[in-house]
Length: 242
Ligand code: ZN
Image 1 (cartoon, rainbow, N blue to C red):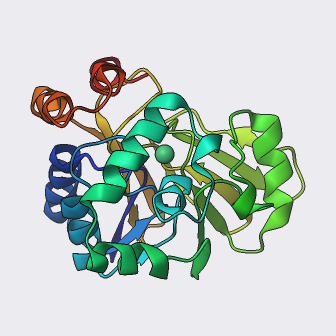
Image 2: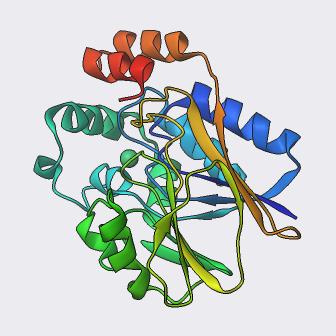
């Protein structure tokens, strides 16, 4: 079986549709999503609808919380605040119910899903460095923890009791004697300098995990952002992936 893994869609429907199309061509039949379906982008309801229809395992991100008033909006940067207020006005009752149903963490053997960090999911801390990732490895018992939040994909592996290491390639085989922390990157607003949408495919038979980058119509999303009256910065950053 193949599992499609993604995160941080951020109301970017064009990116999400291309990613889901790609995952289907890869034979994916099960989906895992690490949160932040909404925020920043121009299509919150449509993105919620697409993700809900997958019937996968989905956890809540800080933007999903912010838009429900579960998290004070003042904690977000100015552009994010503006987008959250705008998003609140776009959501219907059904959208809100779905977002409200999302847990902070969810196990889906051999995975644990959490948006920010396994040590304190409700603190919304970022894991950027190998040192931070290594620290986090002690806070979960699952073989593989999947996170999002920073929009920068990475994979960290620790075998037995040796030091954790970064895996510097797009694909790798998961070893039964190792523990992993994977940041699955972002579909709708990548920030690692690569503007293409990010997702992963996991093959349960071969235990192979692959990162993929998918082109989508960025200009179309930028036009929608501007015509919705959302901050221009949110349109501009999509073109550079920062
Ligand atoms: Zn995010």
